[in-house]
Length: 137
Image (cartoon, rainbow, N blue to C red; front, side, top):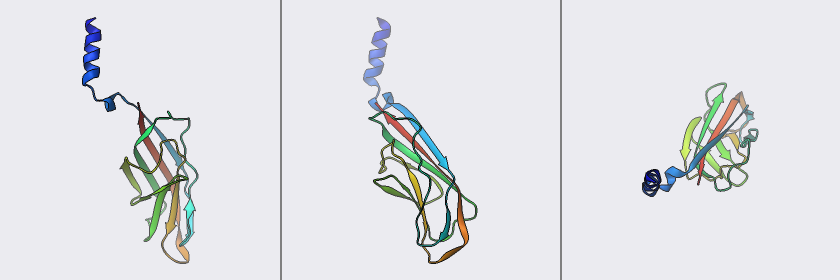
């Protein structure tokens, strides 16, 4: 009986957010080679390996992009779903919620260089990785 009272007291004084379950999924792929300015290049799709709980909510998104050479001036990178994009201002970072995606959406990196003509040397994206952290009640 005493154990139940202690559990009831603990539950009544613990914020609901701490009772939420947490999860994450990560995806990584080789990136494209950018050879011409003013064109968009998409990465391979990145998606969770299994279905997520229907009430899952994104807590944060992290990304890491590796280039073969330094980033050229005018490199623009976005992380996109079918319905929305968010601009990434650096090659490695983390964005806490709110973000314009749901945790189970397929994501792609979109690359472009704001410049005309052939890129010399071409920009080789060695890898792009995303990690989606989420929670549910």
